[in-house]
Image (cartoon, rainbow, N blue to C red; front, side):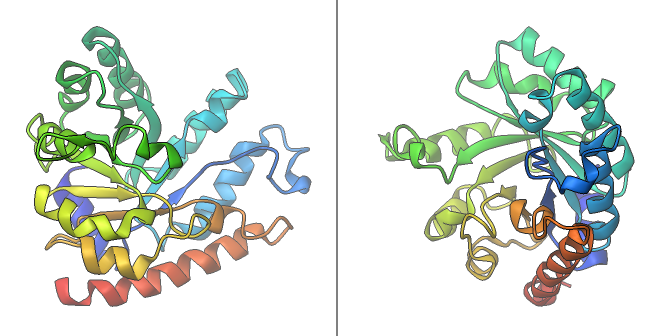
Length: 270
C-alpha cells in the first residue's frame, strides 16, 4: 500500500486506528478452543467486527511463532483474510546483516502479503535497506519505545541530543516518507513535539494506547501532520474487551469509540 492509498483510507474512514492482533491463545475465549484453528477463528471474528473502524492491522508475530507450524498457518490465513484495503503490519522487529534482511523482506513482502515490517536499526543502514527495495512496502523503524528498558540506550545522551533522536534522524535519510515509518510509544507523549520537528513528514506507528495508558488526545494534538501521519495501535483494549461469546461485538464497540474520537481530531485535515 502506497502512502497516497493509506492517506485516502484514513480520510475515507475518518480513522487512523490500527488494531493489534496480539492473539495470545491463553486469552482467547474458551468456546473457540475446540475449533481446528482457534487463533484464526478468533482473528477472523475480530477483523469482521472492526474492519470498518480501522485502517490497519498489526500482527505481532511472536504470538504465532510460539505455536510452531500451526501458528504460522494461522498467521498466513489471517494476513490473507485481511485483504488489500487495510495496511498490514508484521510486527516482527527484524534486522540483520544485509543478505539475511533481504530474506526477511522476501518472507514478509513476497511469500506473505504484508505492507510493512517493524525493523530494529541497531545494525545500521545495510540491515534496513533491503526492506526499502520493495515498491509499495514499508520499513517501520524502532524509534522511541515505551518500555522501561528504553532508558538503557534510547534515552542516553548522544551527539547534540539523545540516542533515539540520532537514530531517527539518520534512518530518515535511508528511505523516504513514502516507505519509512517510525515506532514511537504512546506513553512518550511529551516527546512528540520534538520528534515531529526531527521527522516532520513521516508516519508514526504509535503503540501503547488503551491498556498501556497512552492518551489519544495528547498524541493527536502533538504528533499529527498534514496527512495525519499517525497509525495509533490498540491491541488488548480491543481484542480482549470480553472473554465471552460476545468478544467480537465488544471489540467492535471499542474500535467504533476510538474511530469516533479520531474523526474529531481529523476534522481540520479534511
